[in-house]
Length: 78
View 1 (cartoon, rainbow, N blue to C red):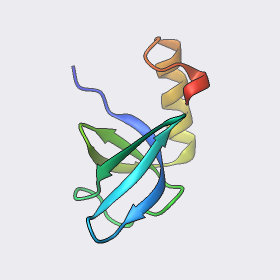
View 2 (view 1 turned 180 degrees about the horizontal axis):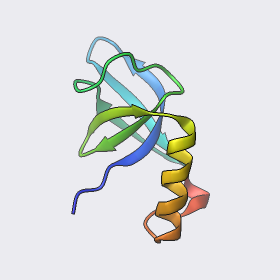
View 3 (view 1 turned 120 degrees about the horizontal axis):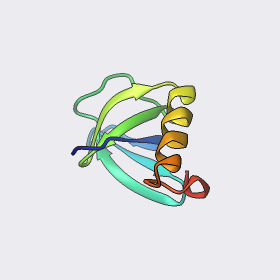
């Protein structure tokens, strides 16, 4: 099963087409090669080091709540 996780963009690097995203305390650099017009504070779905698409803050919150309820991501880390 594949799982994409919502994360918030905290920094952009236009030179390498990457972003630093945050999920709670966790920070990760991801490729933006598959999405356009991503900015700081946007939410993206991340899978294996790639941002797949942008999502709304409300959708990110709902998804993280569902993942928490399923025991996949602890809410205090979201």
